[in-house]
Image 1 (tube, rainbow, N blue to C red):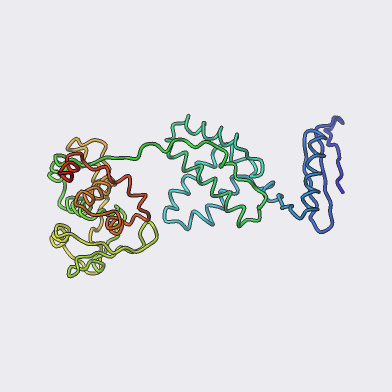
Image 2: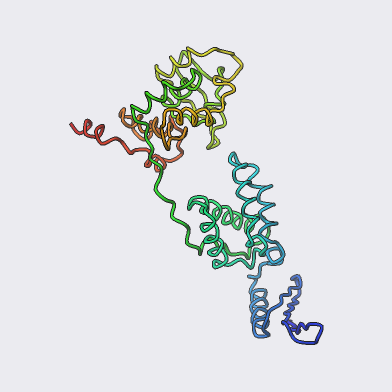
Amino acid sequence: MATINSREDQDGVTIGWQAIVRKKGYPSQSKTFRTKRDAEAWARLTESAMERGLWQNQSDADSTTLADALDRYGREVSSLKKSGKIELYRIGNLKTDKIAKLHLSRIRGADLAEYRDRRLKAGLSDSSVRLELAIISNLYTVAMKEWRMEGLRNPVLSVRKPSPGKARDRRLSPIEEKKLLGECTPSLKAIILFALETGMRRGEIQKLLWKDVDFTKCTAQLLDTKNGEDRLIPLSSRAIAVLKKLPRNINGKVFPGTDISHSFAAACKRVEIKDLRFHDLRHEATSRFFEKGLNPVQVAAITGHKTLQMLKRYTHLRAEDLAKLLE
């Protein structure tokens, strides 16, 4: 049976209406509305859902703010990811926005659209805003499945996302490669050459241990990679030659104590190479694998891309190389 009570201020003026639904076998439910009509409509819907066995408890979602949910999501989900530090940083940014004060059950698509526009206006890139919206979306999914908030709806699904933008396609030209290698310290030169031969990520190069390199089989074992799987990669004769010139500590790292990103950026600046990041060497290496005639399955085995679809952006081959294949 539903009860509708008026809510009054200290002067006796009605400022809202509270609906209370009590039904045997269910916890008491209450909610306050601006109009009596809205309170009555909510009470009817709640009673009907209970009678049909479709009612789902919304009390947790009604009392949990997005900020509180983000804290829990950070502890239970983000902290367990390999990219957890980056995601926790984004969560910190999310919590500074006024949308974080809203309760999960009250956030609508319009609220997220306004949030999206605020973030873009503040200067965030389209991809950064997309990633923040993805965190909120996954938070709702987790809340519905694991936090007893089954009655929630994911408002992110009704919001237009910023364009993902064109995938980065920065290639290293032969002239740039020659200039860069001529300017590098011996240790950085070895890292660059090794990256171009293997397509390994910066983190994978930094973590590579001598004990995981097999000179007899010409392979390197990469453990606990970004996608969560170990990977055995082949080493070209040039990659082997790079390794053989390095000092060796059997239990140590192959490339110890090098701030790769900083050193690489500084070297590029000295030879006036613009808009080149260390990660572009992975793209360059992957493109060269295709130019050598390797097929997508073979390339994926080397680079660790989980799906062949992910390799489509790495097949921007130089026109002159494609022309040679057509002869």
